[in-house]
Structure formats: C-alpha cells, structure tokens
Image (cartoon, rainbow, N blue to C red; front, side, top):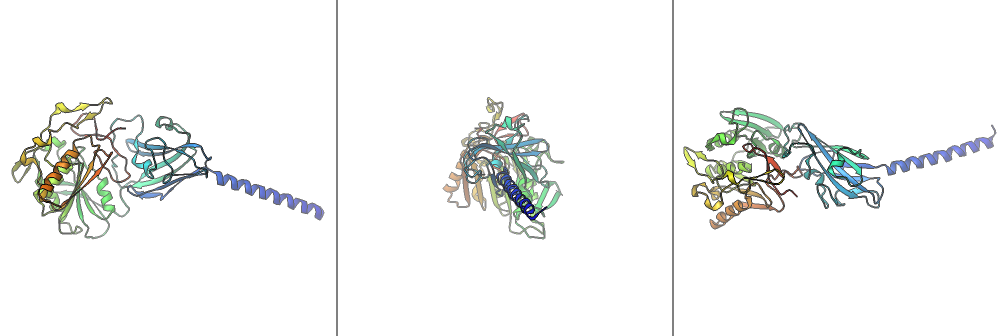
Length: 424
C-alpha cells in the first residue's frame, strides 16, 4: 500500500468518525428524559421536575405513581412541550389531569387513589421508617387515569419522599395508662415537646409526629382509642376523661430531652376538641395549641375532668346524608352552634396561645362557623392570644405541605366513606 492509499484510508476513517460522533451527539441531545431533584426529600420539601429532549409542540402526560401496602395513589398533568423540547413544572401549566395551572408540586398534592380500589382510602403513611418510592413517567399524548394504567412510558425516573429524616429516634410509650410513640431528634436535647392527635380514624397515626421530629421537635403521637389495650371505638370511651391526656402531658414534660416551660398540642378534627380542652383546663401545662379543622365547643361526646361532667353539643344520626356517589355526608350531623349548652363552649380565652387552620370547603362539619364563633368570643373578651389561617378551596383534612389531599375518609363509627371536602 502506497502513501496515497494510506492518506485516502485515513481521510475516510476521520470522516466516518466525525459523522459517527455527530450522530451519537444528536441521539444524546434528543433523548427524551425526565429529571427530578433532589432525588430524596422530606414530604414538605419541593422537588424540581423537568422534561427535555421531546419534540417541540408535542403533547405529553406526566404521571406520578406511589405504591404503598394496601393502596396505590397517583396524579397526572397534561403539558405541551415548548420550543426547546422542554417542560418545567415551575414554568409550564398543566392543561388537565388531576390538577391545572402552574403548580410545581401538583404531581404530589393532587394524588388520588388509583382505579379499582375501595372508595375512601386516605393517604396516611403507616410505616414512617420506610421511604416512599414515587415513579415519575412521561407518556405520549394527553391521557386520562384509565389509559395510564396500561400505557408504556417514553421516559421515567424515581424519587424518594419521606416523613422522617434519618437519625430520628423512636420511643414507644407504655406508661401508666398512656400509650403511643415519641419521635425525637438524635441527641439529649432538650427539644420543644408537642403532643399530636388525630380524630375519628382512631389508632396510632405517626406521620405528622415523625415530620415534626424531623424539624426539631420531640413529638408524641398520642392515640386515645383503637390501639393496643385502649378502647376499640371512640364511643367506648364515654365519658372522655381529660386525666388521660393530662397524664400524657405530664409524662412528656418529665422526659429529660424535653424543654421545660410547657408542652404544645396539635389536633385535627375531633382531636381539636381534646386539644382545646387541654389548653384551657390545664393551661399552665400547655404552652400552645394548634387547632386544624376544629371546633369551639365540646362536640359529639361527653367529657369529664376531676369528676365533673362536661356537657357537649348534640347530634342527630338522621341528619346524615348519602351523596349520589355513595358517600356519607356528616356536614349537618351536629346540632347548630347556638344550641350548645353554655358549659360545652370551650373557654379559649384561658389558653396561652392558639393557632387555628380552617378549610373553607370543609364538608365534614361546619368548621368555619365554629371558628368564627371562637373568634367572636375572643374578640369580645379583648384577647390577642390567637391567630386564624383560612384556606379557600380546602377541605377538612389539612395535611402537611405537598402531601396527597384527602377529600374522602373513613370514620371509625360510620359504616362507609365520608365526604371531607369538595369533590370537583
């Protein structure tokens, strides 16, 4: 082979190499990908989601899918790819799906139960020690939830969400008659102490306490029925003895890792009745009370404290209604606020600090009326120990930021799923 042939061969090789490099570069550049960061976060932390390498002007559906033992939740949004072949959840609006408009975390908070499951599943993380694995997938066209069950994605990735940061300690409580679990940051503290309670669902619900511990609190998830040797049903507790909750308060305050000076208490739904009573019957022990979708009266069940019965706002089962979708509406279940016995009204002026969260589309009970009544009372008495936050379009179960919104739930003493918010 002469030098002329060698030069020709080298020239052909270099030309082939350049063409091959350019081809590979184009394939890499146009490869459809979905990017999410950070890949592991707490439930209340934002995630950036971006798509790249898609055909400009094409329609795509972005789906989030969360499988948990016994339940599957998912969300999806419809998007049009921009001129650069990209979609950003922070800039591009969803045109349909489980949410619309520009909502950077819409693929998380708008999650709903997947088709084919029992009506009324609430997303409440059972085992907070195991992170949630969420798959983000991209599909051609604008698909509905049914079509997404079998469609093959063109790109996908996976992220983790959790309620509990690594390093949180879990302490099981079985002291006297009180039960539950404490979640606390690693180390001796002392940390601010909080008692966390839920309502008619019963059992031990841990996810909010785990999140509070991840934010620096010593949080006591306190059950009061439906757990271990506690009464099975909320109605089995009559009357609700506030001494149980005072005993839990004293126990938490006595722990070396808890700051002195009082315990905070947080309640949702019926748990707010208990929390508010705690904040007013032994206010020297409760430094702050958070009332989520609550009440200003002792409602539905009798209580007692130090041997004295506390009257309650009555109810009427005949006022339960069933919607066209087969859901139970408890909205008018309670008697009107103005009919409450005087001693049933909680003397909120005795509390140290109060924070109310109100969903203005609450369909579980008349939360707005109850908290408006609380505000009238506190204003009339010249109190400034409270703050009220009202959320338009929000239902009864106000969850931590970006957690799936629940519009339907099961209450322990009702046979069926109950409506908690407006189903659009």
